[in-house]
Image (tube, rainbow, N blue to C red):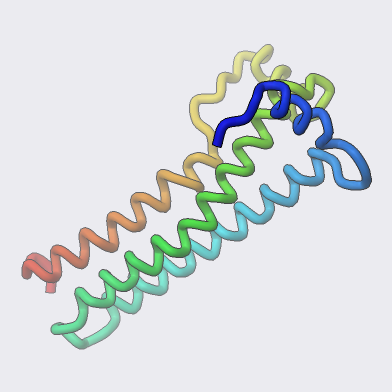
Length: 148
């Protein structure tokens, strides 16, 4: 989907109209993103526990395959929340010089703190990817007989 540059600027400039501001949206999306991440971790831990706690050796790998598939489905809304949160922060840091988050970020840079990674990216992409790969890896290891 392609937007004209002026359309993007019009949308960004109209974000703080009414009772709902960009700060309210950032807070809402951040809480939603964290909640979805916590739910993701609960589902991951449930499938890990179910896979290793069952005594059905013939179906053990199936639990991990199903778990990886379910985890992919749970990851999709988590990823969407990450994308929205990331976009809001980019708007704040690019266009909202008076926003408190932007001022804190600049203050931290002046004190010598450089951001080396983004926590939202860890929560939205890397940790879920590792969890899904772990479930697939365990399922493949059980199917091939490396793990019983």
